[in-house]
Each structure stands twice: as structure tokens, then as C-alpha cells.
Length: 68
Image (cartoon, rainbow, N blue to C red; front, side, top):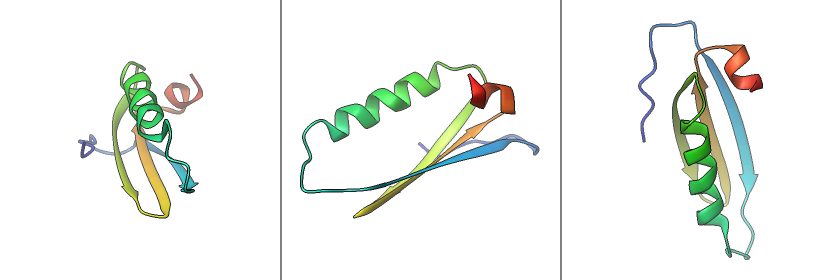
């Protein structure tokens, strides 16, 4: 999903991870985290890239939304 962010200001939260050989549950947990984020008020979208290093940037309308 490409984030459709509004005109600034908005906020970004950056999450990074390092992949290991153990893959069990990774995809399911990533999907659950995205599903839960989408349910939160103020969630605007997300962009991510994964290889050995994963980087996910989620976008939010306010600092209060991030704190929740």
C-alpha cells in the first residue's frame, strides 16, 4: 500500500528490523500489525521495503494518534 498523505504537517514513524533464517509467523505478524494500525484513528498509510533489513514507515495525522 502506498501512503496517500495529506498536505503537511503529518508525522512518520519508522520501524526497522533485521531478518533471520526463522520465517515462521513473520508474514502473519506483519499483516496483523498493519491491520491493527489501519483501525487506529489518524492512520494515513504505510510504505515498506524488505530484504535482509526491513524498513517500514507509517504515516499519522497527529502525535496523539501515534501515542495511542
